[in-house]
Amino acid sequence: MVGTITESWSFEDLVELSGYRNVVSTNYPPTALVHDGASDERIVTNGVAAYYVSQRDLPLHEADRARQLLERLHDLGDWASGEIVERHRRDEERLASGYHDLKPRLTVHQMFVRRYVKAHPGASIDEIAVGTSLQVSEVQALTAELCGHGILVAIGQRETRYELSASEVARYREFDNDRSAATTP
Image 1 (spheres, rainbow, N blue to C red):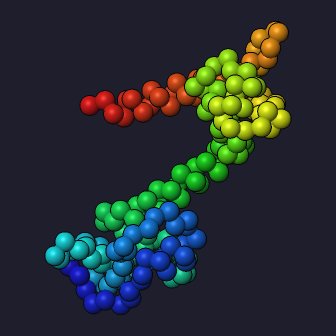
Image 2: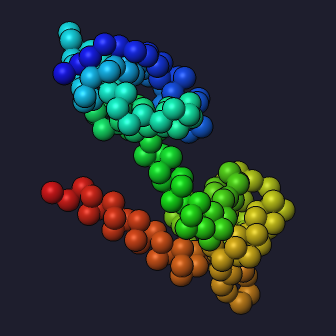
Image 3: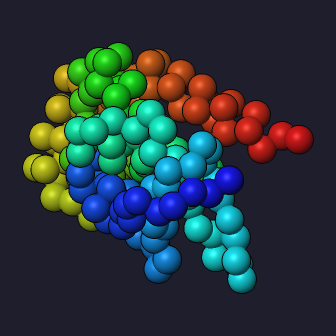
């Protein structure tokens, strides 16, 4: 049962105060209506959801309160809050696991080279340069960096050619398996 409304929080304020990254844009952001009743409720009127969050167990500190409100909006089924909360959880997991230390982030041009080599194993510097529209000198530097990161390996004796390293091939295989398992009924 919804009690008396004691606070109203806009979605933008919740995200900003929570310190979470805003990863959504929406024409109709949710509003958290804090009330003095016993439970959280979602009431839909004319296709528009209103989110009533009980003040029970809400922290007093503003940032903690905003985080808790986003969590509870997510629990009530709000899509935008869910995206932000889940993105924050994923980012925290990656930070705790050392994810960013394991695989360096690639620049745009490094990504172009990696994608080209994935699609064309055994490609030469000249072929990669033509296929990615990059200068040969830049491709030489990029392939050296990617080999140093363990993403590409140089093969061939007369002319150096490149392919994905075994660990990259395994990573793509694992990714493809996960994706196909998710789409299989």
